[in-house]
Every structure is written in C-alpha cells, then in structure tokens.
Length: 356
Ligand SMILES: Cc1cc2nc3c(=O)[nH]c(=O)nc-3n(C[C@H](O)[C@H](O)[C@H](O)COP(=O)(O)O)c2cc1C
Image (cartoon, rainbow, N blue to C red; front, side, top):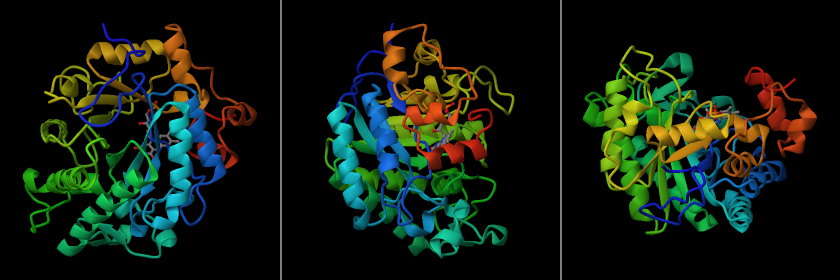
C-alpha cells in the first residue's frame, strides 16, 4: 500500500520526497507591483522546511489584466523576477520542489487594480467584462507560456496552470456561457482548446525537466461532472502533463448533481498515461491524507492544515495519528507558523472559523 511518506516520480522533472503538496493559497502579501514580499517568502520557505514534497505559490497573475486581488503575486514581467528567483533558490535549499501557480482572473479580475476592462470569453457588462478578440485569446495563451518560461528562468521546478474555480481558463470551459464562434467556444472540443494549447505551449517552450501541472474544477462554474471528467481524461492523455490537481474542496464529498459514488471516484479511475493525480479539500489529518491515497490519488494538496502547521507534512509523515489543532486559532499562533499580518487579516475576513 502506498504511504504519504513515499517519494513520487513524474514524466518530467525531479522526484518529490513525499505525497504531500502545499496547495496554492492566496495570501495578499505581495507588494503593490506584484513583487514578492519578505512575509510571503517567509510563509512559503517555512512550508519547505516543514517537509512538503512540493511547495506551490499562490495564484500569480500572468498579465496585468488578470490581477484579481490587492497584494497578489505577479509573474507578468521580468521586473518580478528577482523576488521569484530568490524564492526559488531558498525553497530549493530546504529540499522541497517548487512551483508557481499561473493565473488570470478573466471576468473575476479587478479593473480597479489593473486599470483595464476585465477580459472574458463573452461580454458581461455587470462584471465590467468585454469578450476577448481571437487575437487577445492568442495573446493570453502567449502570456501563460511567457510566465512559465519566467518561472523556469527563476529556478522553479515547474508551474501549475490554474484552470479551476471559474477563473479565465475555467471560463473557457464553461458550457453555459462560452458560445464563441471562433473555435474557442461552443462545442466541448472548442471550449477545451485554450487549456490544451496552453499546456502544449508551455511544454514546447520549457525544458524536458520542467514539471507541468494543471488544476481543474470537477463540476460547477458551468462545468457538468461529465464534462469535468472528459476534460480530465483528455488532459491526462495529452502527454504534456506531469500532474492533474483536482480541486474538490472536500475530498469526502459526493457529486453535487446526484451522480453515484464519491466525487473523487469519478477521477481516480481515469487512465493517467504516466501523469499523477492530486486531490485537495478538507484534509486535516495524516489519516485523511492516507485515505486519499487509498482511493487511488497519488498526491494530496493541503491548504488549511498547512496554514495551521507550517510542518504539517513532516508531522503527518512521522505520525499516522497526527490531527491539526482545534480552530479557531489566535493571531499569535498563526504568526508563530509564519503566517504574516496581511495574510491573517485576509483569513479573518474571508474564511470562517479559522482566526479568533
Ligand atoms: C486562504 C485560501 C486561499 C486560497 N487561494 C487559492 C489560490 O490562490 N489558488 C487556488 O487554486 N486555490 C486556492 N485556494 C483553495 C486551496 O488551494 C484548497 O484547494 C482548498 O482550500 C481546499 O483545501 P483545504 O481544505 O486543505 O484548505 C485557497 C484556499 C484558501 C483557504
């Protein structure tokens, strides 16, 4: 039986020491120009020291029009490279592997921050969003590829494309709204095209040792479970991916639309073609993580548990009985776990029951 302590190999890039990954966590600690702050570096490097097989950054915007939050990390310009380079090198020194999550907010970006209208596959005036021209779609694909190349130059082991949670890549997958007629909307084959072209573009532009992941939403945001599964099936078969990270929000949940079984089971049975399958959502103990592997996942991505304990991974690997501390926790407890003041404010404002 596979254990969370077991190392993991991939089609490209280095092995991970274990099966536990730091989930991408927006922490609003970057400088106003998207460059990395000391607090954000300390947060991430502590998770590297804390034993995670992979440390992933928060969603980082690949183009100014994609910025969705104040304090969001950017990977849209070479001016952002020095901070990223220092982060990659300090993470590598801890022995962990590292990745940047590449993100574009699309209709959920923030015009007040970016100074630009929101970009979207369709027109949506209530979101200040204007349908992208075909040329703008091609530019956006190029922005994702350029950001991946920047991550490679900075020294990261890889990137993960943020195709989940209804942001721009996910908006292209949305069957309710994406009725474009230029080959990037309408039929399923046309809606998945942007994701496949970004994957191919990144694979071609980066070296053979660069690790490429993709995060997807299984259902919701205009994606039916059948289409979520078909998207997963096609990207796993594409030959470009090292890992697919399914953002389940709750690994134990049933499908919302009434399909049989557990949601996780609709993805663990797909052929992987050498790529690895990750899952995320409400893993709060070593036993929860082990259960995900028993279901057939290769990787367990951990968010809240890694906020509560910078060394959740080391503790879970060492002790099969390890369970996270009671919540809510105090600001002082979070500061002791290298969660900076801006991140604590963000958690206190938006995530129930975490901060006293
Ligand atoms: C504070 C916070 C910030 C998050 N930011 C991101 C993000 O930048 N990108 C992303 O794909 N998911 C993001 N998520 C979702 C997490 O990566 C994760 O999938 C989710 O929290 C479920 O896992 P957990 O229960 O272990 O936290 C965020 C979650 C939290 C709590």
